Image 1 (spheres, rainbow, N blue to C red):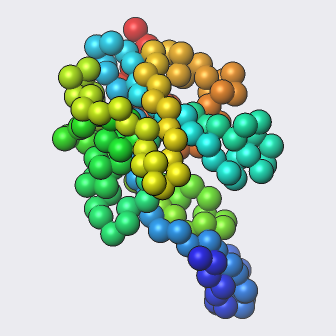
Image 2 (image 1 turned 90 degrees about the vertical axis):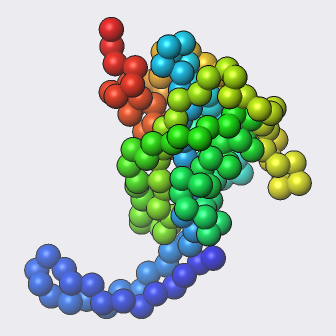
Image 3 (image 1 turned 120 degrees about the vertical axis):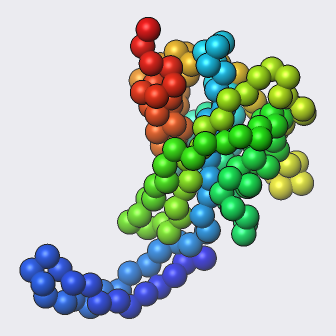
Length: 176
């Protein structure tokens, strides 16, 4: 939904200014990086994204961290459900690492970022998303170093995923 607002904004000069602004409001979301510290692996997904496609991404397929809208659930509750739907892994303990506005110039969405450890035994399904919602998601288990290198190679261009992989490089998979 596009929201049109007429607001008064106080400028750095302390003067007030009337502005007409628009923002796209789609609700808040959550994202998560699944990682296995011992195996040095992460779980990501590949899926079609229309905005990327219409903006020149060949095929429209992006490699991303699992994510979804909150839909009136708490961020931690919703991300546990989303990760099971998209990746097939069930995780009980998720750690919130930060939250961010991803495109505050035009979108109201606040995104909650999580990490969680996974074990091979925590895979309880195939993942792939919900077909009735048009989701066709490929699950990728990658060595962390390969996934991190995919930022520099341009294979990973999704902002939330880049942020989570950088968090993991600094806090989970520190250089040995």
